[in-house]
Image (cartoon, rainbow, N blue to C red):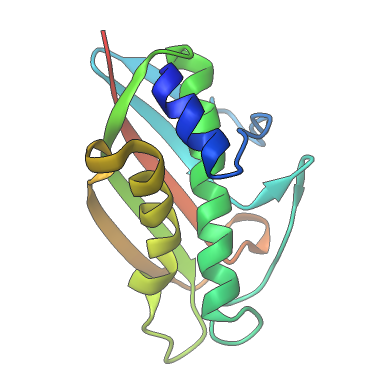
Length: 154
């Protein structure tokens, strides 16, 4: 990550978490050409899921927004682990999956947690294409999962 991004994280009072080890036959991130593809990130802290349940039933939209932000920070850490500290130039695409209670239609507001974090960290280079998808269940019972494609510099 560039020193400018490191400075922005610090000014936001944020630090990159440790990259969570995968729980399956995949890697957290792959650097290919000018892109870094990050596997879906669920809200973890110290290797443990921090919340479970469905948004709109067990988890409020505001809590889910914060969880989405946590997932985005984890995605940033995974990308930096393969692209190097100077290797990330911006965000290309975000896909957010929200475990949704029946009738919950606020998925875009939940995924805004990730989008807002990337805009705060990268500025204009954090603007991205995005999908926000409601699903019945997510791995480990997570309420939110965020998948990201970053632009790599050099």
